[in-house]
Amino acid sequence: MSDPSSVLVYAEELTFDDDAGTLSANLPDTASSENPPLTVNQIIAILSPSPSAQPVVLGLIEDADNQDAPLQLVAIQTSGDIPAQLASVPRVAQLPTHLAHTASVDYVLSTKAGTGRAVPFWEAVLRPLLRFVAQSLSQDTEPGRVVVTDSDDSVREYARGEHIAAALTPRTIVLLSGDGGVVDLLNSSTPDAESTPLPTIVLIPLGTGNALFNSLHKPLLTGPSELVLALRTLLGGVATPLPMFKASFPPGSRTVKYSSRDTAAETPSDVAAAEAQLHRQETEVGALYGGIVASYGFHASIVYESDTPAYRAHGAARFGMVAQELLKTSHPYTAQIAIRRAGGDGLERIPRDTHAYVLSTLVSNLERTFTISPKSRPLDGQLRLVHFAPLGPERTMEAMMKAYDDGKHVDVAWDDGQRIHYDDIDEITIQVDDEDERWRKACIDGTIVDIPKGGTVRVQREEKDRFNIVVDSRVI
Image (tube, rainbow, N blue to C red):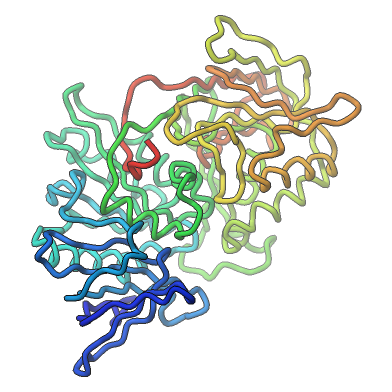
């Protein structure tokens, strides 16, 4: 998909309508194209290499109902003044460090992320945006390489390449993906030497939940869309180490994922028929790195059982659909769990043998509006644990819905002594004792791991930096 309206137009004057809250371009009579008005929250940046240069306003209009052009990049060059109402919009005078050496900048388009928007976004928005930036700032923005994934293993294969493992100069990876693309990078890239510079990730959030991006930008999620924020960060953000944890698994543990037996066939809309098409793939695993969440119990089951083509077609709504089905069962997960509290010396056993929800996380949000850890701040690096006993469908749903109310679930308690537990931790161990394999699952940033009965999962903060990630400087 390419958008012919993504052209640079010249405006003699920019006008801001305070009543409508929109910016409009007054085009000369000879203009061959008209640009629609932009709100401040739709404006990505103002390119202004010098006081004497004519600035360029870049904006993004998102209209899911417009099937022909759901994404429209707007670019306006003007000889007039920039209205004072745009004072909060980022000004870009030159490429940031992570984009300055274009030969070391790769763009990875994850075609299986979310609802498959990576390639359309690249063609309609990101590629023309880079062209406008090059023209306005007189700097090269030609990618070092563009990788379009064609399988579930493509990101991992890219990350294992010599261009990352043996890099002599810092490598920037602009990742058009969801959280799954990040975990693939974290677990596939192994630098050849201590002197190898850390790769830098710029995340363009095109997944389902986009937990990492939304958590890193949470203080700024008051107006602009995720994609506008991502493009602002791309053009003006700064690189900083990405906090990570390491999950270690007992012998016999395997990652589990499902793929269609016939990749060319159309996915049936009926869930049972779609599942009948699936092929189960297992890979032995000893450890995984993550930057978002390590869970066991209800959350892990939701992720595991929603990972089918029929469910994935529903986007983020699939999690709620599966949750409703799991609540009917309200399975009590059998495990022995111990935690080492933040700053503590030894492990402390959680005094119960069955559990409903056990989730440790480095981030605040699992979705833009679903706050799982309200105390978490961008890049604070503190593992936090949310857990509770089997409560039954009504109480479980009550608690989960309060997570959508800015994380008020962590304060929930009932008169009989049951409550939601929320702790700062440095480590958690989970000995999985369920007889049925269906319930012996751990989730590491969306990757499902099947744990053998009696095996113990250990999650700890990873002290060694492995990747940088680009964030808005205001969250540091």
